Image (cartoon, rainbow over all chains, first blue to last red; front, side, top):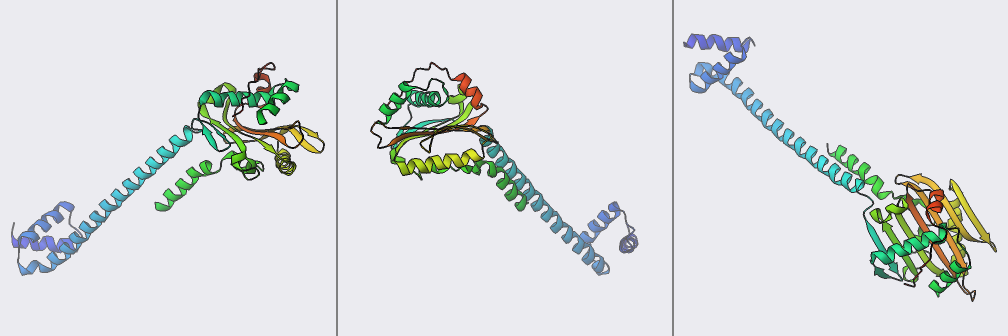
Length: 136
Length: 157
């Protein structure tokens, strides 16, 4: 291809009439030639190339940040969701006058007895006597 | 994006912070603000252990109290009774002696509060039990499921 062809293509470029393929070819030619006749075209195309590279880099960083944020959000939702779904956590403990007791059977006996005291119709002197004994 | 994450986190944490029991007047008793923790027996059971009762949370406090403490606790329970959707209460000598309250349901199901007080033989103190329950069960269900001839085996802890 002759210098004339590239000059025409450069003019076509400045008129905004080049196709992407022609623009790519022109950029390749400008990278190879050091003819001062194409300095202006080289400067303009070089500027836009640099802009594109920066935009592409920014876009990559932005996409990466977005992905990381989305991943962090999903992880957070998964962790909190799991803790909410599994709530209430299994717990079985008595604190008697400040002393911790985790004997499951003792705790469940206490639960059963307390529920019986409150919800059973069998609330009579025996229950009162046992309560009194319990607290004395 | 950061704002969305912060708002999402806060919304997700909200139900964790806002435990149903926290809104009760009688929460002060469970927190040891009426009778100090070294004078109470606190029982806390959650989860699988309670499936037979169809409840997910059992939190009880037992203690011996003087007259002023009894008045304060029964006052707090009566405050909670104002918001109850159903209740059974007995008042003896001007003081609450027994209460079963069905509170407005919370995010974890029904919320029930039980209270019982019995004066000691020598009349110097009163034994009090206060219980908070959460789950699918109701007052009626619990009355049906607790056998009337249950043998009580209370042990001094």
